[in-house]
Length: 152
Image 1 (cartoon, one colour):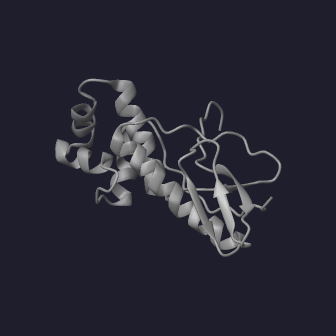
Image 2: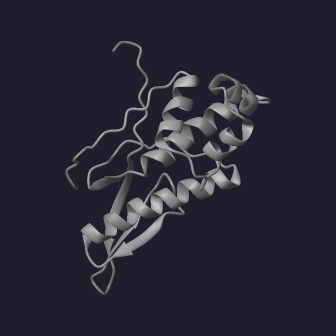
C-alpha cells in the first residue's frame, strides 16, 4: 500500500510501584491519565480504560487529542476502544474542514446532522458500521486490529 497513512492509537505508558507494592501508570502524552492496580496487569488494564475516558473527556471539551509519541524503553502501550479512536479521526476532520463540516458529512452519508452529532458525541450511541461509513465518506478506511505487544 503506497501513500497509505496509518495512525495507531497506542499510547506509551510507564509503570511504577508505590510504597504499598501497587502498580501505578503515567502517560507523558496525556498527563491527566493516572491510574493504578494491584499488579502490573491490572494497572495496564485500568490504564486502557482510563485512556478511553481521558480521550473522550478531551473530545467533550473540544481539546486536541495528540498522536501517540514513540514508545521508549521500559514503556508499555495501551489503546483506547476503537470507537473512541474513530471519533478522534472524525473530530480532527471536522476541525480541519471548518465551518459546515458536519453538514457536509451528513450530505455525504445521506443522513441528518443529528446522526453526525451522535458520531461526534464522546458518549454518543452509534454503531461501528456508522463509524466505518463516516470514515469512508471522508477518505479513511477503518482498520481495527488485534495486536499483542510485549511489555517493557
